[in-house]
Image (cartoon, rainbow, N blue to C red; front, side, top):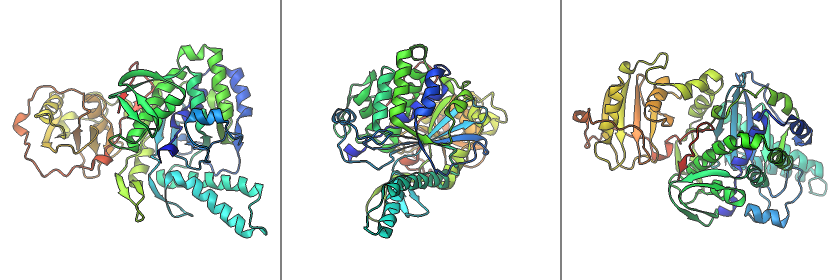
Length: 492
């Protein structure tokens, strides 16, 4: 399976990078008419829900955007076999508020299990192929010679795209306004065009299925190595969710690199980006790229944020034994809906314990759960929050109950959760309906590096407490990234 996991998630962001550079318009105007287009897609009405929504899909096709087969050299570069791929293992929903001031790219894990309108239950990465094959089967049954025509083949691709678009709508509550699709080759071309992307790993990696072989620390990757970096999901604590963390960290640096002065002032790099787009992207036929890009020139690198939908498990199985990721569609819709306007996006990023309108630290009770082997960590973190005026809740311990530190709240748009998150160094926020109003829960895992303070609340700490029922490790919301700042985030 590892050889089929080549996923061009980071490549998808290149469309976005090109849109927001704000320079090189002569190149870009030419690009607008050169990109391959797809007709007959069931798109939305262009921002009536408060945001323009772009569905970006990465496929494992062994062709370019014009349908031309990749050369042997290109196949070797992307480190895959020649068998044609049909999976859409990379799915991003980019929400851009109508004022064009910010953007949030929301990842949907490839193994999320969904119920579709036509093909039944499926991993979301198989929806495109499932709808396409269903159309071809019908066409073959109706054809006199049992063989679909070339027009049937084209219509089947359209059916696959629409099946995915509508499944995303059913899952998130959002009807995409625009559609962009890219194959594997685009990732390599794009990364090479900007001269590589800086990444950072917590530990050395040697995983042969993806070809990932890297040392710990900061390094610059490009081409095939960059593809291996974002492909890996084996030997990672949370599997595909940690793979998404890799990809989002990569994308945040890719956006920053693309928007940097060194790229924008280099005609050679700009030309290479445009050439990569010409060979790689398919967009919906009604998308006026140039007009859209002109509206996005106010976006800066720091206003591009990467998130992942909340999940309920990463270790479930279908009745026939297929490994899947499960989600609660209501939670997903609530989470995605929180990024529909600029005000919501700014609230997510800018809340602070003392400066958040409507958040009174003294009226909020914060429970802290220590899942590490560090004695007294919950008490010390609670003490730090107490010094900021927050109410002290339960201090609990549950070793190894979470992979990733996070703040849990009853609602995805609870400003108090983001205030506590910021106070602790920007922890990710997840939804847990069991957390009552006026309270949040802080879960501390081995990755916690925020404030610890003094153990001012040790009298409330009880290692023997057993009445806390933590969420499974797999539900923990993954870290979030943006394209601002100077640091390169280190990941697993």
